[in-house]
Amino acid sequence: QVQLVESGGGLVQPGGSLRLSCAASGTIFSIRAMGWHRQAPGKQRELVADITRGGSINYADSVKGRFTISRDNDKNTVYLQMNSLKPEDTAVYYCNADGFPDGSSWYQDVSYDYWGQGTQVTVSS
Image (cartoon, rainbow, N blue to C red; front, side, top):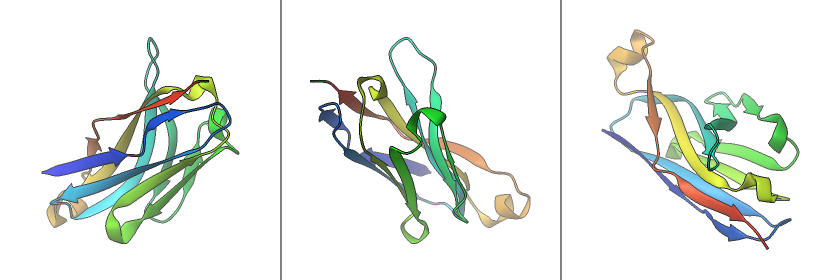
């Protein structure tokens, strides 16, 4: 059983910063990619940023230059540093991991999607 636990959300004024963390725990052999998605009220969930084990990074256009994703492979943890926050960044932020629960799944290249419970980020004055 794999669990993703997010932390770091909250209320911040426009222009402010927050840092989200997500740690994967439980039985997992290897994690290929980790990332953050967000869902605002009345909107679909969208990718914010993701990072592979090797360090390749992908950002949504709306956060480029403001958000920075990083990862600690030894700790199975991913971070999202969010700067210059805007009201339109308000959403529930979900951590995601694409991983292999055991050596067999890794050998067969059969990965699974894991999701955190989400953490609320509110940008408002």
